[in-house]
Image (cartoon, rainbow, N blue to C red):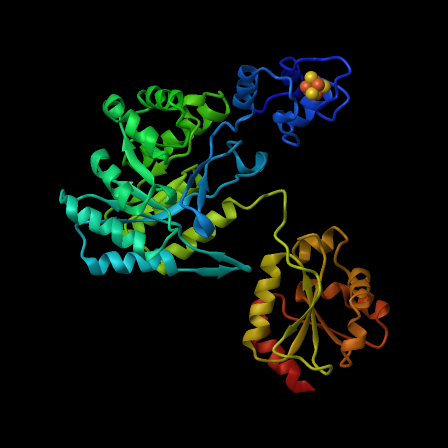
Length: 451
Ligand code: SF4
């Protein structure tokens, strides 16, 4: 629950005419701090205890946790809403592969290669999985440490989860190094007294495993020891139960402001179904239902790509349309004689049109008009994409100086603007193109051949 500026102002020292924070009054400063635009440290007159109290009030209802380091560092949590449309979801869940020390070294290498190298491009973004979960399944300590060494050597910054009894996880931490910030999985209520000092000294994120009734007690004790990077596992391995618990945890943290459950979660589709289809379906449900880390038994491109695409969609900011730069793009090295296609700067539309046009091998120009991220029909219906706006873009981007063909192809969905565009661009031949980008595969070669 967001703190109100008025509530925060009541805790400030209220020194008359002070202004040391750079604001005319404590109230004005409080409003800025509450909105996140200023840091509470700018008031030098606060009692440290009050400052800590304010920091606690300002903390997001679900605290962030960062695994790994460098370019591959993964931050989860820090969420503020139950429903995406209320604001946005901030940190997409990490997608991890489970690697057991019972598997062959060939499988270790194959899975590490997959997590490090499997990438997909969609609407100009690179999608990839995030982490490896190293499971001490065999009971052979030496074998597990060998697996940890193998994973550490494979990449200096791949986020890891050390899934092992705590004694062994702490030994594994020495192998991979604390500074790569692996997640230790998992602390239970029974472990608390015996492992507190060692866990605190380790200074890395820890997962807490236990039923919903136990989790608050464990997280509060860890927090009292200064450990705030915590990941929750309710222990359930049935999809329906896990989904219900995910919803309950999110609502408790955000709607009730219940801090002891205000941490990201880890879930295990790998233990929910034997077949990969079942695992990936469970993973999809859990990506949409608040999971912080999702663990699968293997990565296969045909299942991973849709899952990563779903994750990207859920975790894109609904307040910010996906756009590309509005400009004149060259497709297949066009010449001044090549035809000009026109579309909007909605990313999905642009990439669909550009990919289809490229695939034809026909040289062409692609004029992308700024429609504030709206697709063709939505932009037209709001007056952002019509004969007048396209003509303005043609002039603004100096298209007439570069293209002598004077042939412009408009989307088939907007055949109705042909006349108005002809009026706006005298001397140009306005051609109605296909209704769908996929139609360019036959339209463009035929149009180019027409001369
Ligand atoms: S520095 Fe502190 S006491 Fe002074 S005006 Fe700002 S908030 Fe108030």
